[in-house]
Length: 477
Image 1 (spheres, rainbow, N blue to C red):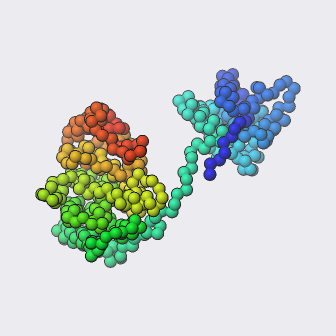
Image 2: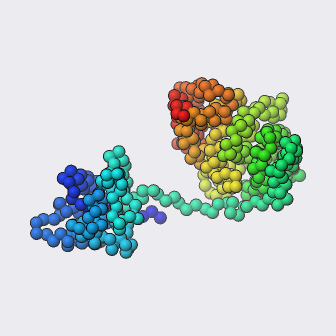
Image 3: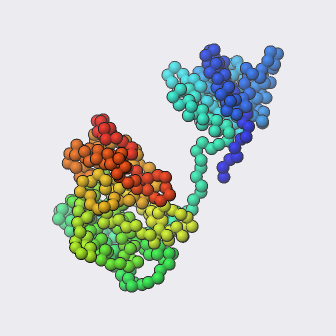
């Protein structure tokens, strides 16, 4: 629950007089606070000749009607506080027991007002462990001042998110048999490339059978509830996790990614020949699995393998002919799963399908940020790969969860990262990729490239062109 705001905040300012310039800065600060609705107890306004300074300080520090004591840190304040000299020394003797006692530690707010000669923060010993606001730098003064005023008004600087539900994977752990784990581990052994290729082909074929035989005996079944549909997809997770376990050993097999892509193509081709409730689950399974494979290759910096699966031509049968297509053949928007998950959780997710994937992420392979990034990378690659086919681009269901694409885009200023992306998108020369990038950028500027977004969502799927201009690409070593 959020803390109540403070209607009329009152503060006391503790500081060391210092130079006239410094005193003027403190006065300007106190005046600014007053103009922003903060009642300031300030010695220059409150103390008159003949007043007891100690009583004033003690009353100001301990007065319960004063919400915060603002301690303006400067080299002179640090010295006087540590030496217990002057008015600051007196205030320190009053304040430090309050801080150490921790009865109301939040009342005391250190504020760096002037730094030391070597830019060090001048904190007295008794304040060493307290976090502070920084008003010593003109460049960030406004930002820090606003943070301070929010804090004085009881407004949370970083709002704590609402407590969610327990993740579904707590109850849905999948267990892979020891026999399978041991058999896959053989690929690490010292044997010929031909033997490893044969073994991998065999493992992949076994998984293909498991996917294609999934509920095959029930493929004429009609009428299924949302709850039953979710449970069916749950059952496929053990196959998914077996597949992902096998992916850990791909690097031990020469051209292993080609065998994986071929087997995915075969499964997809077979699944597309049937139209049942179970085939739709199988298609969604392939969609999820493909994103995982992209995430694995990217995470392991296996850009050759990543480039291969993204640029490869996949041949999937249709009603009329065998079509040559791009990796969008693995895409499946499962509306039934969407509705089932939203109904189960009583929430209006952008994508129930995407939410299910997040709830049941295989953390042994990647985290949810890496999974979301892989999905967004597929979307970007669809825009930049030269031979990508299809009238539509890969729509990244996971883009609301992405936190990595913007930082990735900034890295493209370096020649190294630009070369990696050009390679991922299938370009042998960086200049050819930059030419394509410029074309896409131009389409965005002219409004010819439609933004991909969920209905009712303000944010669109992140495209590299949104974060870095073509002229910035590869400008640094």
